[in-house]
Image (cartoon, rainbow, N blue to C red; front, side, top):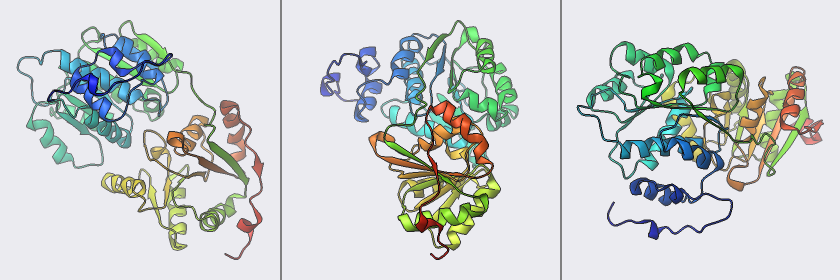
Length: 403
């Protein structure tokens, strides 16, 4: 730590804003927050930390991109720094556990955690499916873990083989609970939670983009006298995202996509498709057309998925065709265009998809292809976003048969 003090990162008092230093966080944590350039809390951070820093359970409603990951990581790391390590801390027995629905989200949480933990002595570990099983098992058996971030299936696998002991968990976070419900993970999550101490003996935080009755019912089972924080959902697309919708027969979609990318010279574009088979078909067609493209879906093994994301993030790949596995929890800057090859069945996914562009104040463009099936999904999306999508025929230069 050296002699670092808050004086080295002065933050002005601004009416209506809450500074991180207003929470009297441990200096090593405050230093890492400051070095990342963060001075003021987002609404989910300021409202949740009021409770979670005091050990209170929380049910938080907030979408991806609102800063909720940092909100629960700051609460966890503050707890770990202020509470004494239990005597005889066991190998494979995490003090804090974060459950997330997808491998990509787990890895993103770990990336954020590593930044915040820079000046702390804590041991972070992730366990996810599709990655080196033996390596993860050896890490679990190697030394005590302070923070474990996991997908439910792989965690249960290790738990059943007694490589993970969840009886020492002091803080439990369930991230994107609605997504876990949609993906059928709740039975696994219930088994995991039953393996942790009773709710009276742990702090529990649950975050969800929506509060359905099912989510609230589960939250009441897993939390003790929770505070409820709801951040107004900014469903309307950001003002800096221009939305377009092209009327096109399903049979012409791939041809339109190819010409659109080539004629408009798009170089940092995400294309979303609803199904794996469609994703592969689009990927193979674009590749044959000489477009610098890669794909991201559940059929791609995990190591390849990580490399694919990094290549796209670094600009080595110009077009990324993906299923909704990439729609949440993935932070990629300067995506110029998002193209919906199909409209998603869940209107919330439309918001998550187009939110991949226009980040950090940059200008962004979304283009949706409206075919026969997509027309049925359109009204729900327009109702949710309170925006009328202007459906027009594509420009003439994209309809001509010659390239």
